[in-house]
Image (cartoon, rainbow over all chains, first blue to last red):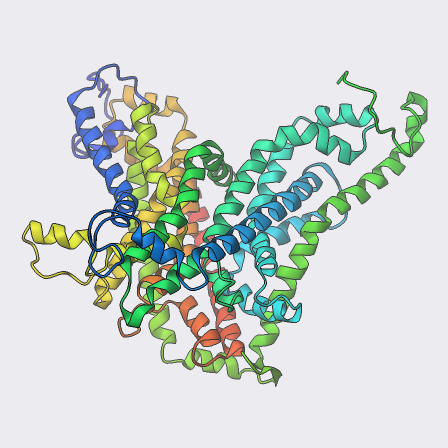
Length: 305
Length: 319
């Protein structure tokens, strides 16, 4: 560390041992450190170990899903028998994947569409009820899922959307709106007004200005909104648990959870691991490929929060 | 923007000519108000149909005799509330949920802060470590719970192999077998799933602390620990407050992890308050009215608690 030996008359009264915590040693703001010192080697071992600890469960699931294991379809040798069990479970994994895909795609499209228009309206227009509507959208965050899902169960039945994947997507879109609307509003606000004013002066309507001029500028925000909507819809558990009772219409997380309770109370852990891998794969891929957009979503929330 | 004479000619205006602008301003302003309302209409529609109406409905359900299969059978207030609060699992669920919330929040935020501190430098290694911490947060909580369900299984668990190998325990440990073990095993899952998320939020806070503050402390000869306690922690307070509120709220509403890992067991020792709402509505009693009443109690409790936290953390900051 680059601690100075030239200590002035120690204004900080806390008598503390500087060597006590290895973790705080790195706290100096991005210290330039050309050569790896002993301390940093120790720190690397520590952080590396912690990183492995975080990666371990998923790696373990992936490996053990193809490994031999008693009580599963894969009893000897390595192979994909557990995935076959999964594929043949009840309506077939294809059906559950399709359900999940329909719900996720619909939710993403609806969330992106609604929040694009909504964000534009909140950032660039004055209209009656604007602040009330924006606060109302954020208020969704204040109400627990369960509190909303009980009346929504009744409401969707009344609307003839019981066991409907479309109904499920509509509800999931509503849950996404606080974040999505907020994100799109700040995305639009970050675009200089001159950009669209020029287009408006050129005679474009506000919608043409949106599509031709603003859309490219807010695209990163839209991608972030889309990623979050996808992950939320793909992974949601309690919403379909309450809203979907037809076992052929449930999305994948519910199907994998149901699969555990099968054959006479004996849990097929191999098939469960295979299910987890199938569930996790798209999420991890999206995360790794689009990490930048994903991280920005958290950042914008944190900065304004 | 010198681009084009747009292909779509403006429908109402005929050429932007300076002198004519003045009287048209209000008309244009009115048109823009209309357009704004139009763009906000889908948001408003979603908000009304899927949020405002359900919130009104849940209040009505809470004062009605409303079975899962029978539907609305008329008012019965305040029977749903008294029944919900008299449920023999109500106080145990409240107690367990609070215990889980405190344990989770303390461990999770402590670890997240430590992680944020060790990975805040730029550089390849830190980037790799950061990414490793963050990967679990891309997983759904339900998927993570299913993963740990296998990870904790007596048959498949790799932890048992480790315990046996190190000689700590010969027999396979049942990680979800006792109330305490079920709690700690679930906390471990939640910490794994969310630590990266909170680390990221805290990193944002750390990055916003100006470098010269550290520089000044360094010149004054402050030790690393002094710097941490006197500079980093106080300046990080807004981020820590945000994390605390998110973590407390999330933990109080815990459902997926317990539904999948423990099903509330053993002996109903890990039933959370939201699980109780769910089981009142859809398991056994099939009483939507009572579940609605309990979920309103939860909502009220949450609002009060958030207000207290908010004021507490704000007041703290000014002090």
